[in-house]
Length: 434
Image (cartoon, rainbow, N blue to C red; front, side, top):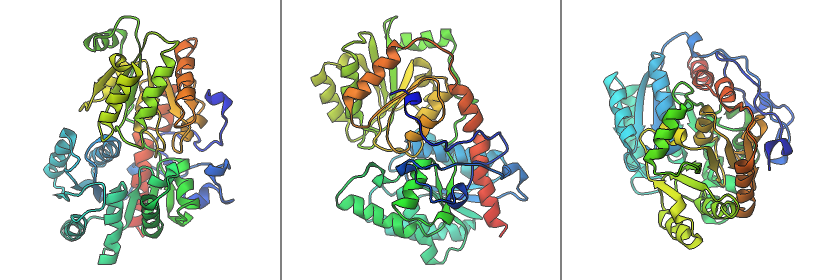
């Protein structure tokens, strides 16, 4: 359905550059707001950006993935911190690495940061305990002012440092909780239990109102330890293509002149639900005969996706790429972006599409619901895991009438790096001054 038919509580007030989108859950709503039950979770801000900090910081960033959205966030934050004159230490894992991870490690080391490969995976394993003690030694050697973990594995390792005597302020950005898709079974109980216990350690930065509400109401993380700071997007880098550049990129892809090109970027994994994407494409192609899909990403469901595309008869209309070091040409080639996820933190893919002034089609999943409340001019949605209704949403986009878009201006005003990362640095500074 169109977002105008799906009103949600306003969780993002327009905040100008130089103010942080930062509130504790208690400050955001003194009445126990619950996004999951449709109550309002409002944001205002009176914090100044990092430029008003009293000293430069030494920040240690810890991440397990070295590719995809979580890493892109870490990479952008590290570069923002270094550009602001702060020193960055980096503990990472090359198990899921990329060329961009290699460059970031070299960049941090070149300006005096300590770097360490923890060599852990995204599931519990025998390398985790040795990695914890190696991380403890790195903290002792680097003596950072703050330590900031990203994603569940890094979050567990960093918050476990408190039991080993580390006293620096600890921060954790989950980038979506596994339980947000309401799974059942042993894995869900284990991950939920870990988050309930460790959620009382340090400060958690949530990327969306849905994610924060889940942390507070389901995981019972104390409200005073939650902050809402959205993902930012680099609007200086992600810009709409000129008509000439768009034509060139599409010719390189071998597209016919009249093709409508839908784009999806994300891991081929359970969370991103690529199988629903392919089924939705088949539904929409019944009426939209010139519809194509550009699918960027790889993962454990790659073989399943290939088989399903062949079974549905849409294989010849799908352009597949495992990885692009620079995703900008992807966005500049497509006509709209789609995200059928089961759950999200706050999707980088949607924010980058908005910065490129593209229409977006999203599942009505936790994390994606935040976008439906932004008043976007070209946003369509459908229930998650529903190919028929998602296919109908694609058809509504494909047959819609041209009208002015507000997507890029929304990205610039509400999700700039200065606003969002400035709020992160302001929180760092507030803890260090105590």
